[in-house]
Every structure is written in C-alpha cells, then in structure tokens.
Length: 140
Image (cartoon, rainbow, N blue to C red; front, top):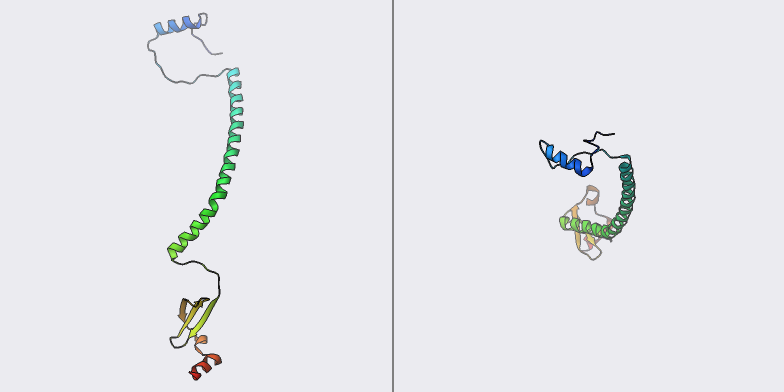
C-alpha cells in the first residue's frame, strides 16, 4: 500500500496541516496509481467505449459506401470529360471509311457522315491502284 502523510487524521485535517506546513504549494497535473476497483471500472468503461466505437465505425462505413455509390459515376464522367477537354477529342463508335487519294498520296479516313476524321501517307502497297480505281481514272 502507498505511504500516506499522517493517516490518523481526517482528510480535511490532513489537507489543512499540509497546506500550513508545506514549503511550496503547486497546482499541476501528476500521475496517481489506481486502486484495483478503479482499474476494474476503467476496464469496463474501455470495453463499453470499444463496443460503441465499433458500432459507430460500422455506421460510418455504411454511409461512406452509400456516398461512394453516388460519387463514383460522377467521378467516371468527370474523368472522361477532362480527357476530352485535354485532347479536344471524344471517343465515338461508328463506321470509318478509308479512301485512298492517289493524287495527293494520302489515305483519308471519313466517318459515316462523310466528314474527314484523319489522314496519313499511303503505304507502298497502297500506292498501287486497284483495277476498280484505275478503271475510274481511265473513264474520267
């Protein structure tokens, strides 16, 4: 058991005597050893707090999951929009027509509406005209 100053006195008498005879009185924080009963009470409080905290964490996870379901589609759309703004292009699914322009030596690519999508130089194997394209050129 811990040493106590004048244990035979009451708490009030001990306090007054210590205050009158102390070299210095200081108001501060310090560590005090817990009794077995206080320690058991702290353990019960800790267990109760852990249970309540776990319940709150489960509720928080559910709320986060709900928000994630709401936010993920917007994040995906924003990522696509950002890419389109950066590249100034959008991804489209459709039919493309590659038309060899032998006069300019280019392979021109058109979409289904007839708009030029892109062009590149003809490859060596593409520079030879087909019989179809040669017959067109002869008839003109």
